[in-house]
Length: 284
Image 1 (cartoon, rainbow, N blue to C red):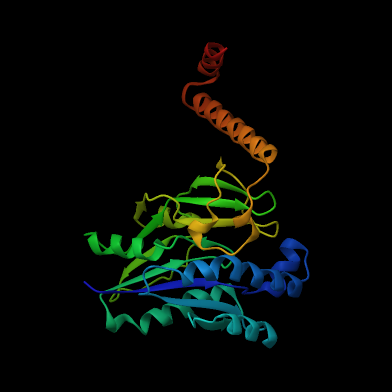
Image 2 (image 1 turned 120 degrees about the vertical axis):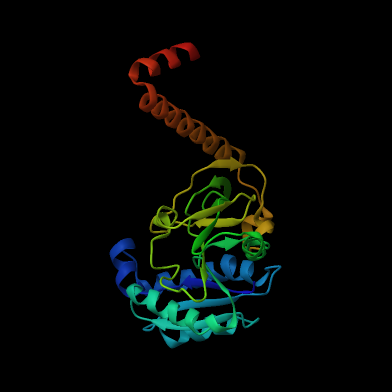
């Protein structure tokens, strides 16, 4: 069995409409910040993959100013980005399928992995997915989800250990003779509900960055005292400093409260309020 592996990133598609509407920001100012995040986190982690057997296709809004594109191309010193341009999210499925169609006669299996432009992955991320595909004997299509990762809150400098199913780093594995959807056809949260999914349970496979201009992502998970930025080859000042102990302590207390509330909800859902009362009475 042979395969081809594609990494797909949506950089700023429809940013002129979505950024003012969702974030209330000047889209050009937002784009400047996005480029900085891209090269601080995403680019370095992709560049430092132990497996080089993949192609990285990045989709830009076709209306992006030339000086921004030139700036990104100039910083792509390793030439690892394949540039694509589109004007609408809904066109991505067909455009990605066209890329896959162009490679289907060269292999048996096509792997498509998604990666947001402000996030990062561990050095063995691509290689781990490829190793899993090579050893699996299962009918395609299926998804591979790297469950375990880390969230970084750039404002506090705190890393959080996190486990997420059907997350934004999920991969789609397809037979090259039976291509029908792309990795962006479905929202990542719904992929595991629609397609058989293999959970790859290795530690610290991805880094999701919460930087204050995310549309959805928030800090959550178990706060970590250790600085693990170097694990993802990121270039950021947090690599040289640890969060203040006061911030870390508050984050840990918040984590314990969330866990307690989740447990309370599960007990109540499973056994009713009577059992919940007995449980908390016994804890006193």
